[in-house]
Amino acid sequence: MRQIVLDTETTGLEPKQGHRIIEIGCVEVNNRRLTNNRFHQYINPQREIDEGAMEVHGISNEFLADKPLFRDIADDFLAFVDGAELIIHNAPFDVGFINHELRQLGATVSRIEDICTILDTLFMARQMHPGQKNNLDALCKRYEIDNSSRSLHGALLDAEILADVYLAMTGGQVHLSLDGREVNEHTGHSVESTPQPVQRSQKLRIIPASESELAEHDRRMAAIARACGDKPVWQLLEETDDTLV
Image (cartoon, rainbow, N blue to C red; front, side):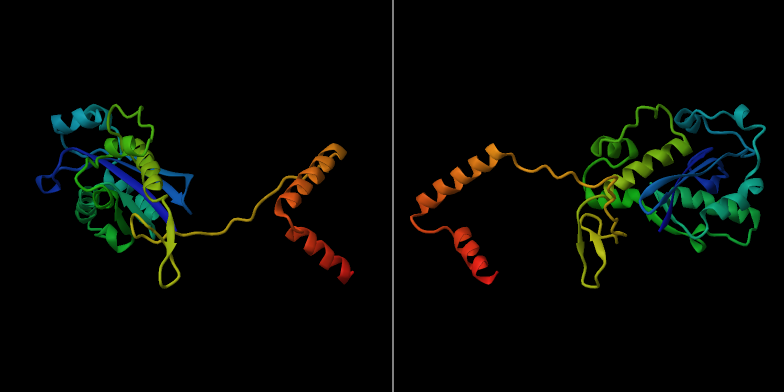
């Protein structure tokens, strides 16, 4: 399954108040492995950034002044995520902003859910760890993910960190369901499992026992036979084999 871990940064908290996306960061996960395939774009929102939002992500109005508009990058973004499962922390927030931007364009795709499936890791974390903090920093601490470079929020950085968190969250034991699928015991989600052949770079080296080791083995077997008070089972098997030769 192709999965895209996605995060956005915005001018504020509510698209209904005219707030816009200013950064999109995506990283690709294929068969539970991070690839080098990424999508990252800063966007000119054509409006001022709220002071509170700027304190979170540190992106300034001046920095975004020469960046493309959302309509300029929309086709590339949609092509990148098309058909994938989007993994998002607090998905309603990001999905709400993305759909608001798409509707503003009057694009053929007006809902990202029409071309992607959505997995919300915040919802998943709350099911797995009820009553605990489940923000990204708390999950990093819980799953021992290094987030020391995260002094400020950033869409691409947070997507990369969330990918590590998601793989850790879904990396537990699996069991077979009634229909033969492997299911993660913590999340209930199907786990794609492809057996991998063992690769050996060279033939195994055979080291025969030395004469002293063979002699010590015979002494040990004789001591066990005496302790048994009867012929041990391996001697009986050897005698049986001899009669069949």
